[in-house]
Length: 103
Image 1 (tube, one colour):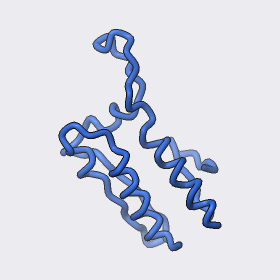
Image 2 (cartoon, rainbow, N blue to C red; image 1 turned 180 degrees about the vertical axis):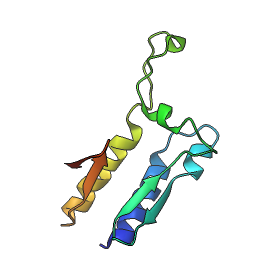
Image 3 (cartoon, rainbow, N blue to C red; image 1 turned 60 degrees about the vertical axis):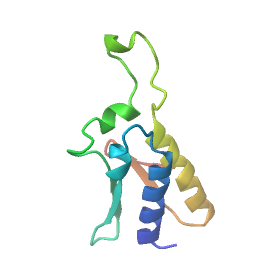
Image 4 (tube, rainbow, N blue to C red; image 1 turned 135 degrees about the vertical axis):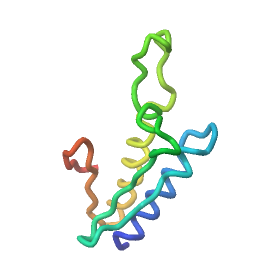
């Protein structure tokens, strides 16, 4: 499986797993491939500036101690997807906060 296809499949998987209220976040998920053969998945931007908060733990007093039902949704989706790619004998690394880890 080539890197372009992996990026497209991963972006589609994230769209499928994306929490949905208005569809704005889902519509911003894209995969781009660089000249060096790596891909980047991005989401959010002007259309969904709240994107990071959908994935993170709720710490604001506003939530009265409730937990975020979507916490780590994209990390969990990516990890599950990468296990499938790895099972297909494709070495893919997951980059989080500037650190490359095995999936």
